[in-house]
Image 1 (cartoon, rainbow, N blue to C red):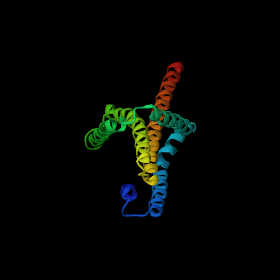
Image 2: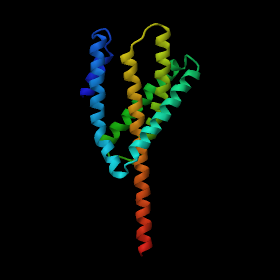
Image 3: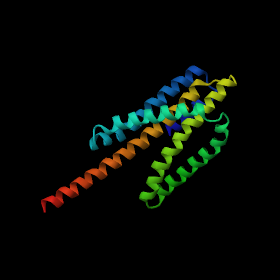
Length: 183
């Protein structure tokens, strides 16, 4: 809830000055880091290398899609935006169905894998949108930093979850083989 209020305050360019919005952005990043702490500690319990691998993959994906945004047609962000926002609504509906009805593994996989694709495309969208805003002299560094930061964190979380699931399933397989070998 506090994160939502901070995002709303950061995006209100006309109401707050740039310094206050930057301070709110720093607070938002700090709170986001605190909320990620428990997920990262769970990942470390599974395998201490998972967060490092997830971070390195996130950086690679982020750099790759950011560079590719420079080579896509310039007006792609106009067409990509509606698809991405509808995809976010779809992910929200899948998440709500998971929360209020019985959770299904398929819904979880949709949220993780489809969400990874959506947020990778959001990197392209946000990068092209920033380029467009810079060319029209409508620069808002705090809002652009917030957009890119949210994309980065969303991709990191999904890659972290994928690696955690992969490590859990490989440990289960090894345990089953060990039990079978003992018999």
